[in-house]
Image (cartoon, one colour):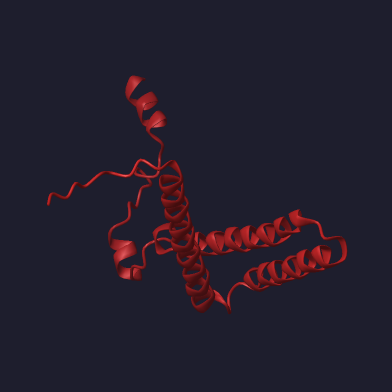
Length: 136
């Protein structure tokens, strides 16, 4: 008895595999974005009312999408919910970037600021004015 292993060349099988991979990637991206939104809400919910406004817009557009579909049976009404989610995601991203420590000045003591700053303003001049002075 000999067994022969034949590779399957079915086009439907590879298409189904591709759709499955796309669904898994989409689910992963959705989980990561929801975790990002929750993390930013936990950090900045008191400082930014824009987060709450964007959440209200997202919920409102989702409800509007449901109502539009209920009354008109229009299958494209889900786009309203997607627009609300994108508005929320953009608002969360802007709030997160605004509060990142990379964009804020260093927290140094007054003594360090006085001792390590130029007293005569030489470091604050642009390079072009220094080049003009050297050329003259």
